[in-house]
Length: 303
Image 1: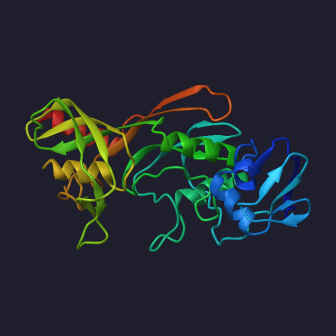
Image 2: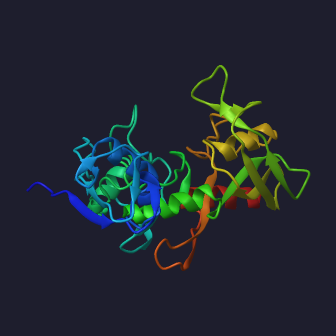
Image 3: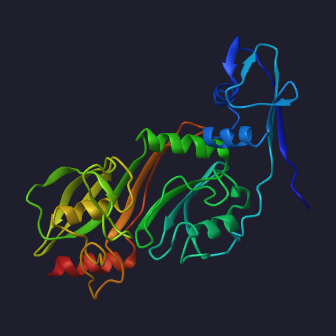
């Protein structure tokens, strides 16, 4: 059975406004980028005529917005065991295991978190885009811990805005090489693609702003346990910043060195806090270290 497009008809009640700004100012449950695509595709009409984003609407005009059903993307639903920490009609928070890629891409055509989400929450299809439905932020493949995904366009728009406004708390636990001299600090160093090794990131002058706060929780003989707070969310940010300080993460084969006792890097997103996009309630969620990291930490503590 073919899904039907959703339509919404509105009567303008403002003196004058660009149609894209008029729709963006309403609670239509769509992001600005999604609205822009719909307008460019002719899915928005004013008094029965398709218009450009800059078209001016005036009081009394009739605006019709059509949202076509998601197009097939080739991304299939695949049932996989994913720990759900919180879920309602608007969003789902999962505890991602290490080894799971967030969305399909080169080298990872399926068996990703997106495939699992499509199986677990079929209505997530097309939310926020067709290639990465529901995704508002990411974790590296070998980073474990808490992630929130949107199940509606309204939630996707609101959560994306919270992340952009740095209103989402994302805290991590990491085991780093060596002993940091300062018990806490801020790494403020721009991050961009490595100028030669293009699959890696690096601190690069002129790169994108990147800020990571850290606090030493415990110090051991050759390592230290850190809690890190992201003020920005660049690719590999924590791993790059700690390597930049000379304290690469334990087991990080890309920015440090592999360790035979662990087949991943020691980085876990253990705390996630944000405002619910509909109720306004603050969701404050925590995740324990997975067994493989807890085992390494126990061994380090024993010396």
